[in-house]
Image (tube, rainbow, N blue to C red):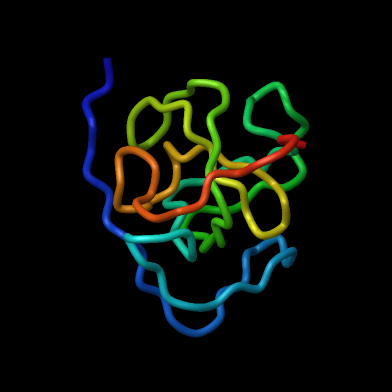
Length: 119
């Protein structure tokens, strides 16, 4: 069992561009709602909340992601423990919450849950 790890929220200002050039994001993170957070390791962005979904992008470590909602999916282990929570991003892709520094070991307090089809 992987021990729980407290995550701190990202507090980024300005504009951040990933090395892939696919996103340009900016803003400040908050620990109380969906918004901008940091993926501290390289992460695969997928079409749905499971490792069986197709990878649509690979983000380098320290990328800022814009989480619009969260949903339950495949249980996976990552940098921040083991969880079935997946974060839906502003580009409609999904990343495992275990690789994003959201400040929470569960759902982000106040963040919306995704509705409808995952893909």
